[in-house]
Amino acid sequence: MGQIKVTRLEPEGLLLIEPTVHGDARGAFMETYNARELAEAGLERSFVQDNQSLSVRGVLRGLHFQKEHPQAKLVRVLSGQVFDAAVDLRPGSPSFGRWNGLLLSAENRRQLYIPEGFAHGFLVLSEKAEFFYKCTDFYYPGDEGCIRWDDPDLGIDWPLPEGTPPLLSEKDRAGQSFRDYCQGKR
Image 1 (cartoon, helix red, strand yellow):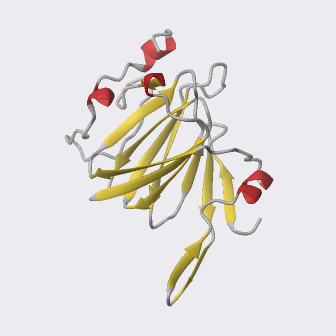
Image 2 (cartoon, helix red, strand yellow):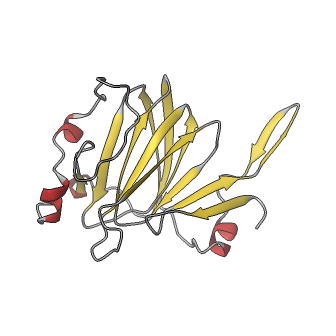
Protein backbone atom coordinates (compact mmCIF):
# COMPACT_ATOMS: atom_id res chain seq x y z
CA MET A 1 0.00 0.00 0.00
CA GLY A 2 1.46 3.34 -0.95
CA GLN A 3 -0.89 6.30 -0.95
CA ILE A 4 -3.28 5.57 1.92
CA LYS A 5 -2.56 4.52 5.52
CA VAL A 6 -5.36 2.64 7.32
CA THR A 7 -5.49 2.34 11.13
CA ARG A 8 -8.07 0.16 12.92
CA LEU A 9 -9.87 1.90 15.78
CA GLU A 10 -12.23 0.94 18.57
CA PRO A 11 -15.09 0.19 18.51
CA GLU A 12 -14.18 -2.52 16.02
CA GLY A 13 -15.00 -1.61 12.45
CA LEU A 14 -14.05 2.06 12.62
CA LEU A 15 -11.07 2.89 10.40
CA LEU A 16 -8.90 6.00 10.33
CA ILE A 17 -7.70 6.65 6.78
CA GLU A 18 -4.83 9.02 6.16
CA PRO A 19 -3.65 9.85 2.65
CA THR A 20 -0.06 10.49 1.63
CA VAL A 21 0.24 14.16 0.73
CA HIS A 22 2.70 15.15 -1.99
CA GLY A 23 3.62 18.81 -1.70
CA ASP A 24 5.98 21.27 -3.29
CA ALA A 25 6.17 25.02 -3.93
CA ARG A 26 3.08 24.81 -6.17
CA GLY A 27 0.83 23.26 -3.52
CA ALA A 28 -0.17 19.68 -2.73
CA PHE A 29 -1.74 16.55 -4.19
CA MET A 30 -3.28 13.49 -2.51
CA GLU A 31 -5.48 10.54 -3.36
CA THR A 32 -8.54 10.73 -1.14
CA TYR A 33 -10.06 7.46 -2.31
CA ASN A 34 -8.44 4.43 -3.91
CA ALA A 35 -10.68 1.34 -4.06
CA ARG A 36 -7.78 -1.02 -4.76
CA GLU A 37 -5.69 0.15 -1.79
CA LEU A 38 -8.68 0.12 0.55
CA ALA A 39 -9.60 -3.41 -0.60
CA GLU A 40 -6.02 -4.51 0.18
CA ALA A 41 -6.58 -3.11 3.69
CA GLY A 42 -9.79 -5.15 4.02
CA LEU A 43 -12.25 -2.41 3.11
CA GLU A 44 -13.98 -3.49 -0.07
CA ARG A 45 -17.09 -1.32 -0.35
CA SER A 46 -19.24 0.10 -3.08
CA PHE A 47 -20.35 3.66 -2.46
CA VAL A 48 -23.56 4.83 -4.18
CA GLN A 49 -24.09 8.39 -2.92
CA ASP A 50 -21.92 11.38 -2.00
CA ASN A 51 -23.16 14.08 0.40
CA GLN A 52 -21.72 17.43 1.38
CA SER A 53 -22.77 19.95 4.01
CA LEU A 54 -21.63 23.42 5.04
CA SER A 55 -22.06 24.38 8.71
CA VAL A 56 -21.01 27.24 10.97
CA ARG A 57 -19.16 27.09 14.31
CA GLY A 58 -21.12 25.36 17.04
CA VAL A 59 -23.42 23.35 14.75
CA LEU A 60 -23.82 19.80 15.96
CA ARG A 61 -25.37 17.31 13.53
CA GLY A 62 -26.34 13.94 14.94
CA LEU A 63 -26.35 11.37 16.28
CA HIS A 64 -27.97 9.93 13.14
CA PHE A 65 -28.50 6.34 12.11
CA GLN A 66 -30.56 4.49 9.50
CA LYS A 67 -33.09 1.86 10.60
CA GLU A 68 -33.89 -0.41 7.63
CA HIS A 69 -31.32 0.84 5.10
CA PRO A 70 -28.09 1.15 7.11
CA GLN A 71 -25.28 3.10 5.49
CA ALA A 72 -21.57 2.73 5.92
CA LYS A 73 -19.92 6.13 5.52
CA LEU A 74 -16.49 7.43 4.60
CA VAL A 75 -16.34 10.97 6.02
CA ARG A 76 -13.86 13.83 5.69
CA VAL A 77 -13.63 17.60 6.04
CA LEU A 78 -12.93 19.73 2.96
CA SER A 79 -12.54 23.02 4.86
CA GLY A 80 -12.47 23.81 8.55
CA GLN A 81 -12.40 21.44 11.53
CA VAL A 82 -14.93 19.17 13.26
CA PHE A 83 -15.06 16.74 16.15
CA ASP A 84 -16.54 13.58 14.66
CA ALA A 85 -18.19 10.88 16.79
CA ALA A 86 -19.48 7.39 16.03
CA VAL A 87 -21.45 5.14 18.41
CA ASP A 88 -21.71 1.36 18.01
CA LEU A 89 -25.39 0.34 17.73
CA ARG A 90 -24.80 -3.15 16.33
CA PRO A 91 -26.90 -5.74 18.20
CA GLY A 92 -24.69 -8.31 19.91
CA SER A 93 -21.52 -6.28 19.40
CA PRO A 94 -19.09 -6.48 22.36
CA SER A 95 -18.69 -2.70 22.05
CA PHE A 96 -22.43 -1.90 21.81
CA GLY A 97 -23.02 1.63 23.14
CA ARG A 98 -19.35 2.62 23.06
CA TRP A 99 -18.17 5.57 21.03
CA ASN A 100 -15.03 7.03 19.50
CA GLY A 101 -14.42 10.61 18.54
CA LEU A 102 -11.61 12.38 16.74
CA LEU A 103 -10.71 15.63 15.06
CA LEU A 104 -11.12 15.75 11.31
CA SER A 105 -9.92 18.82 9.46
CA ALA A 106 -8.87 20.10 6.08
CA GLU A 107 -5.41 20.46 7.57
CA ASN A 108 -4.95 16.92 8.94
CA ARG A 109 -6.76 15.38 5.91
CA ARG A 110 -7.95 12.40 7.95
CA GLN A 111 -10.97 10.36 6.96
CA LEU A 112 -13.09 8.11 9.12
CA TYR A 113 -14.77 4.97 7.85
CA ILE A 114 -17.94 4.22 9.83
CA PRO A 115 -19.53 0.82 9.13
CA GLU A 116 -23.24 0.04 9.03
CA GLY A 117 -24.81 -0.13 12.47
CA PHE A 118 -23.26 3.03 13.93
CA ALA A 119 -24.86 6.34 14.88
CA HIS A 120 -22.83 9.30 13.63
CA GLY A 121 -22.52 12.98 14.43
CA PHE A 122 -20.13 15.91 14.28
CA LEU A 123 -19.56 19.28 15.94
CA VAL A 124 -18.10 22.19 13.97
CA LEU A 125 -15.10 23.72 15.76
CA SER A 126 -13.95 26.23 13.12
CA GLU A 127 -15.74 29.34 11.84
CA LYS A 128 -17.21 27.16 9.06
CA ALA A 129 -16.72 23.57 7.97
CA GLU A 130 -17.46 21.80 4.74
CA PHE A 131 -18.12 18.12 5.46
CA PHE A 132 -18.11 15.40 2.77
CA TYR A 133 -19.13 11.77 2.98
CA LYS A 134 -19.59 8.76 0.76
CA CYS A 135 -22.44 6.33 1.57
CA THR A 136 -22.99 2.65 0.74
CA ASP A 137 -26.77 2.99 0.44
CA PHE A 138 -29.14 5.69 -0.71
CA TYR A 139 -30.83 8.09 1.70
CA TYR A 140 -34.42 7.25 2.62
CA PRO A 141 -35.91 10.21 4.55
CA GLY A 142 -38.34 8.14 6.63
CA ASP A 143 -35.61 5.69 7.63
CA GLU A 144 -33.43 7.99 9.72
CA GLY A 145 -33.27 7.80 13.49
CA CYS A 146 -31.59 10.16 15.92
CA ILE A 147 -30.16 9.65 19.40
CA ARG A 148 -29.59 12.71 21.58
CA TRP A 149 -26.09 14.12 21.23
CA ASP A 150 -25.86 14.71 25.00
CA ASP A 151 -27.25 11.38 26.19
CA PRO A 152 -25.72 10.70 29.64
CA ASP A 153 -25.60 6.93 29.06
CA LEU A 154 -23.29 7.48 26.08
CA GLY A 155 -21.22 10.22 27.72
CA ILE A 156 -19.68 11.61 24.53
CA ASP A 157 -17.08 14.22 25.45
CA TRP A 158 -17.99 16.89 22.89
CA PRO A 159 -15.40 19.72 22.94
CA LEU A 160 -17.92 22.51 23.57
CA PRO A 161 -16.88 25.64 25.45
CA GLU A 162 -18.38 25.40 28.95
CA GLY A 163 -21.88 26.81 29.11
CA THR A 164 -22.18 27.07 25.32
CA PRO A 165 -24.97 24.94 23.84
CA PRO A 166 -24.56 23.62 20.30
CA LEU A 167 -26.71 24.80 17.38
CA LEU A 168 -29.15 21.96 16.66
CA SER A 169 -31.82 21.23 14.07
CA GLU A 170 -35.36 20.49 15.29
CA LYS A 171 -34.81 16.84 14.38
CA ASP A 172 -31.63 16.65 16.48
CA ARG A 173 -33.23 18.52 19.37
CA ALA A 174 -36.00 15.87 19.37
CA GLY A 175 -33.59 12.90 19.33
CA GLN A 176 -34.44 9.93 21.52
CA SER A 177 -32.46 8.73 24.50
CA PHE A 178 -30.04 5.84 24.14
CA ARG A 179 -32.11 3.97 26.75
CA ASP A 180 -35.27 4.32 24.60
CA TYR A 181 -33.31 3.18 21.56
CA CYS A 182 -32.20 0.06 23.47
CA GLN A 183 -35.80 -0.65 24.53
CA GLY A 184 -36.81 -0.83 20.90
CA LYS A 185 -38.36 2.60 20.49
CA ARG A 186 -36.39 3.22 17.32
